[in-house]
Length: 286
Ligand code: SF4
Image (cartoon, rainbow, N blue to C red):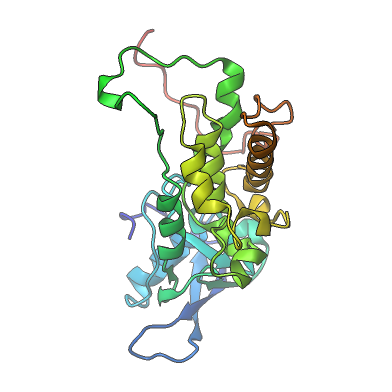
């Protein structure tokens, strides 16, 4: 649950009311769940997460969701908003241009309560690919000095290291939806992140986890994961890079060089919005 929002709900600031249609389910009631409507006043800049907080504070304290940072960093508030996997804190209500907002838990996960998904499948698969640098031989604590990387070597895995573990990609993936053994785009993307890091030597350990009958080659490149990612990461591309790495090492016995085809992070054309105050003056020189 987030800390208190400082939103001005005075009449002059309210633009309109919307109906927030929230999926409700809990273990005690069981059944398929139900949708419950709440009338919410909307002010400029208000997000779907802000609306849920307003409902909890003013109408119904029993509504449950998961959130923490409110600024697209923690990856906790993934929800299915009007049929799309989105972060609640990044989804501005007025930009949806609708009067009814339906909020459901992310698909492809069991539900714990209301909008809270159970991420056990994703985190189990994420843990299994060993999401850390693996070194052979000398134990890490005995290694002296630094590992140097060129800019090209850094760019080769950098975008994949921005993953929030928000799970939106998993909820968009048709293979995750139909194949319980499939690791999914988040863990597979992270396997790529570490295997393409020149400091890492854990390819075989990760391959043993992801290259099996229901593993990485079950990805048919639907690309929905990359569409869903709120950080502009391209997990679908990461998976294709990893497939190539597996084939290349199997045939030639050596890793692929940095990819000339690596795509930079998707850049939205940035335009400053009206009413955003200027950044404060720099307080430190350097
Ligand atoms: S790849 Fe993107 S959508 Fe998937 S868990 Fe990471 S940040 Fe979320």
